[in-house]
Length: 202
Image 1 (cartoon, rainbow, N blue to C red):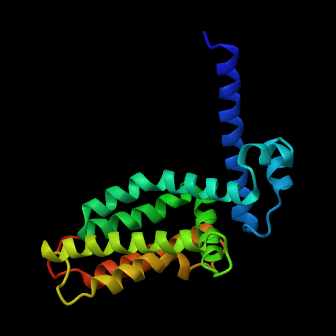
Image 2 (image 1 turned 90 degrees about the horizontal axis):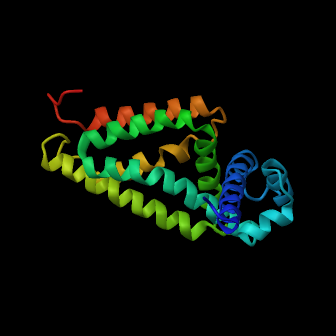
């Protein structure tokens, strides 16, 4: 039987998760600068002061939201990077389509990524480092594809990795999530077709 202390801790975990879910929705809709702590609290059913009790500041909440988004995406992306080659790119296409199942997280990523690349953003260093890490993983996977004979040897893996990584940024002006995902799907599909060797099964 769970004691009183355990029940209190469980309620704290549930409240924290409710705040994160609310923040994902509000940040995705308004961006970081346009979001108010009180609006996030109202969405979670608590006061703005209650939000700050759990996360300390609006910036602290933002980083918690980013970490939650990255946690949810990390396993799937790592598996794709480990697959390497064309399977990695095809997996990215499936990954983009899967984003439709989580429109809030999809929109959040696009909004915060573009906003976070501004030099005055508190998340600028985080996103620059994150993008560098993703680009390196993609380039390594593409190099695996060249070694396996799936990807042409004249393909610049570094430039192709940047192009694949930039797909979510380049479609930032498309506000409808399904259309934005279709655009990413098309970009990645065309990239895949452009670099594959002849005779490689689709």
